[in-house]
Length: 287
Ligand SMILES: C[S@@+](CC[C@H](N)C(=O)[O-])C[C@H]1O[C@@H](n2cnc3c(N)ncnc32)[C@H](O)[C@@H]1O
Image (cartoon, rainbow, N blue to C red; front, side):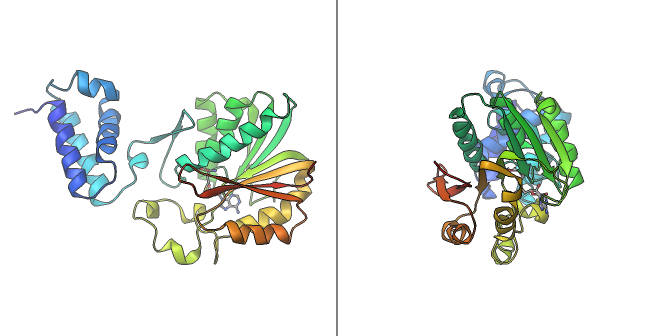
């Protein structure tokens, strides 16, 4: 006999909990919304209605895939919200993370001090495009060049820019770091580079292992890309240019050391909502 929507949701919550999936209710509701096309509120408004068998079967199979394979929720439901916008996500492309919103917030706050002056901004390693697209959406006078070495990431980033109506403000370029970036000056260079240390790669949660190692592996100490960006970015920065990067847990002191060997004049760290130093800001000149 067919069960009600709420009975399926409650089964999924219990099952995901038993399988030690974090936030079982959010997972169950997100998978339900993906399969049914209904929103969260409708679960509870229409919860006592019977659920058609074909959709219910798909729901059960996705809930089991989530739990048994530890398959990432956002690859299952093919999208992720970031900075209030929706982003398409597919296997092979890094899933946007909530902590990266701190980087976006930092850039938006800094731009507010520039009183509407036009900004040329470069992003290294755009992935799904979430940083560039959120910045293009919320900064009026910005022109962005966003790069990635992964052609698949660039394809999804272009689609996401179109879906979020920001494609006219962003040019996506296939580039190994700065190699194919046009020879011009940028007021800001931003990046959430791969920053996981090699030794940490094996200890990542099973879900993260489904994501491309190209997006995660930052070399021996996790700092390969950060070092390269600090080294090369002055060639592309305006006189008062700024570099803003996301960094990993516990990397603050090492990043300070990299700064001390560079020509940058000032460094600043910004914490995420968990109190972890998450964003570093480097000032080429200050004052
Ligand atoms: C941690 S992900 C960040 C993606 C996205 N900006 C975000 O914050 O969700 C790092 C990105 O850098 C890209 N990447 C890795 N090596 C690169 C390189 N040498 N040049 C350009 N991009 C690179 C990866 O393909 C990946 O998309």
